[in-house]
Length: 413
Image 1 (spheres, helix red, strand yellow):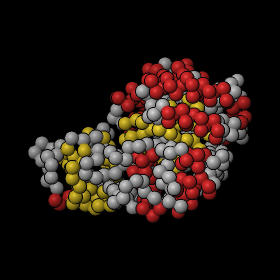
Image 2 (image 1 turned 135 degrees about the vertical axis):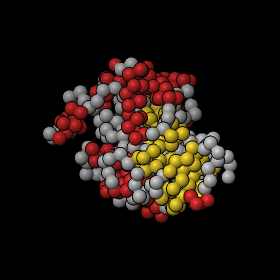
Image 3 (image 1 turned 30 degrees about the horizontal axis):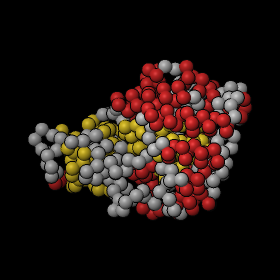
Image 4 (image 1 turned 60 degrees about the vertical axis):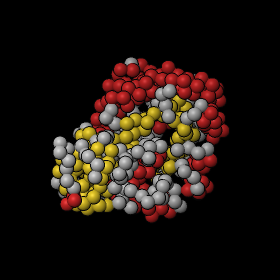
């Protein structure tokens, strides 16, 4: 065993989520969380250097020893879909929906995404960083050690860049790692033609974001009344030419074949997929594109529709879970809560939900080579949960279950 800086021992249930095969978990493999009982994990240089029985573990001189007290340890949770940085909030819309207002009613009255755009444009970069920092603390308290974060509340270049700079500052602060996505094509600005705005995203925004080096991915909201499949494909082609990976808000409110489009163009993920059909499911199953389930959104919006997650699993689609944290349709930073909803509303088991929130989520953001599972050589991102087994992460909902969070081999909570 290499010289260690930390030893976590007396682990009751260690969920390694290790896989003998490359790539994300599919089909029946999604339920295998790789349990090791009565385990220990040794860390050196921010990475895992040994995993084995606690009885065989011996701390090196000077190493920090953490007694897990029989609790459960998993990889740090990974949130592959968030809108972390925005100004303002939309609690008034929550009340309006409870009183019967539709999204169209709210949008016509000046609410919806345009409300967030106004407040994000008005907010300073420092204010966006301050708000993002508060949200990240809540995510960390719920076990999230890595996340994806999108722009998209600017709908014009200056504010989109401001959001991306705020994300970059938060990533530099840590402790969480943040993968940045440019989403200038989140909506069409008021009074602007969709084709004209697509031209602006392609000709002005994508080159400027690429020159600034502020994002890894480009995302588009492909939906009726937003961006058509043809407009989405234009944006995607420009993004790929500029060196960006692709993500897609797909088939959330209608089946436009967004899942199939994402698979055909090699997108890292296709997200939402509430209305996706058999053709898209087949295309996703034959691709490396990860289907990211966001069960908090239809729950919060009181929608009857549910993504066909079980059909996707049975078809061998790679499935992940995210929060869709945003001010309008899912104002929650809790990945464990999304795991609960994935079980109750999408038919996943707690084991499937854990794999979807760790290793498959890592694949969805292009980080599976370093995070998402607990194995020798990978980054030491772990959560010690104050529960007897991993089933409790979905079963015991709505409360903080973290006992300790470790990021890059350092205790951060």
